[in-house]
Length: 490
Image (cartoon, rainbow, N blue to C red; front, side, top):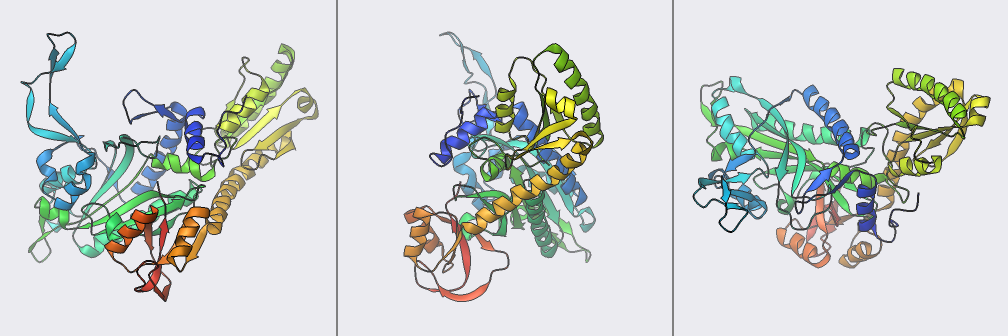
């Protein structure tokens, strides 16, 4: 297979786009700004979904589904929320088409909706309007609900998985009887996301809170996980919001407490999206293609036969089928690539591009010697393994590759996390060797906005447990008690 990817070092953005398309993850659709997630890409998303869904249910959450359409009036009830999403909303104004006198079809002007409907950009408003019917007493709390859905945010500058007009996600929406309980929930869920990122995506993340500028519209606090991509830019990989009583007050959701007094409910919301697919690609992949962690790979092992005639193929196939039975017993996801339309070299390159963690080849000599050639995707190392040892070796590789991918990403982040004590140092790092920058900030919106305006870097997070140290803001020179994390981001 000829080289199909732009060099990562030459043009990271083009490399990413090439890879998503050539590895059969997704493609642009006929609808501007929207994507088609192809079967290979969707299989990875399904595995993410399955794991996360299990983690949510282990923490007491249940799934439900709420409408795609939200009455426009609902958004006007929470001022910060509507301001945060107003520019991204798709609006339904009519409910019927008709044949046009000029030919074709047109919107029927007589079919105008009495109230316009917003296509769901997020579901806080419709859900809190619903919760009003569900909550009367403290006995009805907590409500721990999650929804798997699509959302629409009308983005003008789109990139597959990272920013599209429509994307898939999950959104948790919980209701609580106390502030303390809601805060515990919000922190718990951001830690669930961090665990998932580490153990399944093999991606190290930092945990913290957003600055007021970067906080979710309508939240009192936003917890986040941030990951560093291989071009030195940060990617927000998940958020969890403490909504206080803002939405309960907007939709008049009250309950009788144990003292028989009426009070407003406390709320959280939290979510991750198909943006995690983009994170997976950018955190680990190389110029040869995807590098997938075994836990999320559609196929963990691919077997490629090498033969010259039907007799050799028949013998090799019998051996492979016996091995496939053993892989199945061990719950290893495998693919026997017995296509006769492609040569082995093409298959090697194709499965390397698609990031399959382990590739096994078997030819006539391997058949005679009772051996297999085993290649691991993360290091591209090959070795010959005896038939009797192959299953044990693959079991070892599943764990070792997962750990190695994580350690490599962790080491990269470590080498690209810097401290800046002056604004000149800060700008120099951004220009020459970008990454996470630990720097002092005076805590004001104005300073953060000026830094963003001048450098395009933002505060990615305020650390969960910051190291207290006296310092001066890199921009204003005003006193600061700890450093925050800056970076350019997606």
